[in-house]
Image (spheres, rainbow, N blue to C red):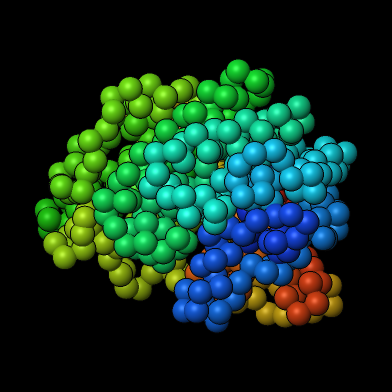
Amino acid sequence: MAASTSFPRDFLWGAATSAYQIEGSPLADGASPSIWHRFSHTPGKVHGGDTGDVACDHYRRWREDVGWLRELGVNAYRFSISWGRFLSGGRGRPNPAGRDFYSRLIDALLEGGIRPVATLYHWDLPAELDDAGGWVARDSMHWFADYAEAAFQAFGDRVPMWATFNEPWMTSDSGYLRGVHAPGHHSAAEAALVAHHLLCAHGGAVQRFRSLRRGAIGVVVNLEPKHPASDDPRDAAAAVRADAYMNRQYLDPIFFGSYPVELRECFGADWPAHDERDFELIGQPIDFLGVNYYSRGVTRDDPSDLPMRAPRASVPDVERTGIGWEIYPDGLREILVWVKARYGDLPLYVTENGAAYEDPGPAGDIVEDPPRVAYLRRHLAAARQAIAEGVDLRGYFAWSLLDNFEWGYGYSQRFGLLRVDFADQKRTMKRSGLFYREVARTNGRVMIR
Ligand code: FCB
């Protein structure tokens, strides 16, 4: 539909990564261990016992990787700063080697005409801060704001766009409730408290940014339209609860100054009392919202799945990517339109979207990955449709530049536009990378059919 609609001029065509997933050398040159370093070194936590010790060796190969970004022709690159590499132990003055690493990376990006988009927290809390209570401690909001301020001081003259947190819901849910991500806790009470501290930390960082720098700051959330698994009204109610938990838990406090009522009901005694004054901090105006989108969430009622009683339902006979996630491109359009309708007309970016497949090995200097090309094409069409419906979408970042350490899945899932051979670190362009290059070069016209 609407073949005449195209992407706006100055649209950002980017690729995304995160520190722990690509850098390797997690303890080099004064860097301190993160909770993911610890978690991945704990037997049984990550598929195959994989760790981020080497990952894509980007800490040493960053120059080559900037070369690949140029080869891809993207005009933006979203990366994250490793807190414990930049501030050893998470507090105090910058670790010179860590600061220089990001500083050189940023300079190389700018030289190549690539806009640096920095995420402050992509899940790698310094282990020392975890020992001091981690995100359960109210002090975490101050640790984070101090870290953010140091990063704005060091890089804010050259980084025009900042995200405070990547997918805070994953930290509270996977990290503190389900225990499948670092730090591996299993507590509803902690998950609710952590969500609140993450929000306060976000607001504190936005405040510091305003007092120091010009430029754009926002937050990146992972959103999914929640669809009931059946016509049963109990499933419909479950989908509303799942929506409150995943989609509104973080955005309602930022935009409306309060949590969705469903959360208090479901968490019951585990729901904390909140200091009303915190909501002023949380509600600092932001310049953009980043949306990560992979799939929709088909939801069913299940009283045993606490606290929300609304787990994901398995949907038979649908198309899936290699990691098993349903391919549902229209969900991207739906969720972007929903954000605008609910929270107002603010600039949006798709800050992650992509697919894992078991790619074939390289054939010469190319990896043929037609399923990933199709996934990207269909999701880009959905993004364009959202623009046609009035969404102020300003950019799209493919996840990911490189095959990398996919958290609990280790190296078993490949999301890259470039293949990484983890035995010798050789990068090989995939067909999807070439496709994306054409998309970026033509500002999306190549995928209009
Ligand atoms: C998102 C994460 C990113 C990557 C993708 C596949 O939840 O932000 O680091 O793992 O999923």
